Image (cartoon, rainbow over all chains, first blue to last red):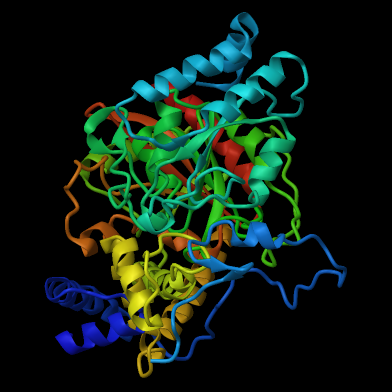
Length: 93
Length: 457
C-alpha cells in the first residue's frame, strides 16, 4: 500500500511540485510498480552487491592543469546572472 | 542507405547537393525523427568536403546524433522542456571523434525524454513514427536515431542504450544497432540518466558501416573514469561458433515464430544449444530500481539556475526548484525521479537498491556460466512487434517490454540487434549477446546471420 502522504513526501524529497490529481495518479501507479518490485524479496540476502561492472579501482589522471571553461562560457546557459556570477534563489526562508 | 551508396551519390552529384537533398527530405518527412536539423553546419561541412578540405575515415558522411549527446553550440534538449533552450559549450567525446574524422553532423535525433522510455512517446517534441507504419512507434529511447537509418534520413547514427534503447528501436525499424561493452566508449558529454548502465553506440544499415562508426568512437578518454581505454578494429573472421538460445528470453507467437526459423538457419552453420538463466526472473525489477535511483540523483542538477528552463522570477529555493522541475519535466521523468527517491530513502535502501545490486551479481554469474559453454547467446530483441502509438499506456506494461534487453546492461555486456526480415510487414530483430569486449565476434556473427537470413527469406 502506498499512501497519498508518501507520494507527497517523495515529491518533496525530489523537489517536484505535484497537483492533487497527479498525486492520486502516481499513488496508484507506484503501488503497482512497487508491488512488482517485491519480487526481489525472494532473492537471497547472502550475495555480494555489484555497484559497477568493470574491474577498475581508483582511476586518477595525471595531476596537470588542463583547459577549463571561461567565465562567459560557464554563464552562457544561465537565465539569471549578475556581475559574472550565477544568481540563485533565496536560501533563507 | 549504406555508406558505399552515399559515397557514390556524393561523387556523382557533389557532397553539397547530396546534403541539401537530404535536408530537404528530412524537412518534408512525417517521421518526426529529428529535434534539430543542423542545416548550416552540415552544408558548410559538405562544401569543405567538395573542396577536398574535409578528411578522415568518415569524411563527407552524414551522421545523426541522439539529442542527449552534447554538441557545442547546437541545441541539446534530451527531448525535455527543461533543456529546451540548452546549447552546450563543449562537444561530447564521441562528437569530437566524429568531427576529427570528417563526419557531417546532420541533426539531433528525437528520443524519449532523458532516454526514459521504450517508444519515444515521452519526448517533449512528440512521438517518432515507425517508417514501416506511421501508426506505430519506432521504439525507444533512441527512436529517432533508428528511424533515420531505416528511412534514409541519415547514413549513420549514434544512440545510447541504458536498458535496450539502441537495440529496441533498431529492432522496430529493421536496422543494425550495437550496445557496446560498458567502458568501450567514453560517456564524456553524454547527458547522464543511469551512469552505471548506459553506453553510447552505433546504428547503421550494414555491419561494415556499424563497425566503421564504432572504430571511430571507441577508445581512450581520461574524462570518463569508467572508460576502459581500449580501441576497436573490425577484422573479418567468420568461424563456427557455439550459440546458446536463452530460455528465459522469449516473445509472443509472431516474434517466436520468426525467431525459431532463424535458429534453424543458424543451426546449419553453428553448434546451437539451450541455456537457462534463473536470475533473469529478477532482472527487470532490479534494472528499474537501479535506473530510477541513479536518475533521481543525476537529474537533481536541473534546478533552473546554471542552465536549462528557468522561471522569470527567483523565489525561495524550495518553491523555485520545485516549480521549475514541475514545469520542466514530463510525467515519465517525474515518475522515475520520484520512485528513485523513494527507493533510496531511509528505510528502503536495503529492500530496493541494495537488493537490486545483489541481483546484478547473480545476473553476471549466470552470464559467466553461460559463456563458459557458449561463444554467443541469442534471443528475440523485443518480445513483440512494434507497438501501436498509445498502446502501452500503463507504465508497468511499458517497462515489461524491456525484459529481453535489460539483463545485458546490468552485466555491462555487448549486444547487437540483427534485423531478420518482416512479420506482417513489420521488422523483427534478433539479439546477439557476447562476452566482455567481444564486439568483433558479435559483428562477424551478425553479418553472417544477416546474410544467411536474407538468402533464406
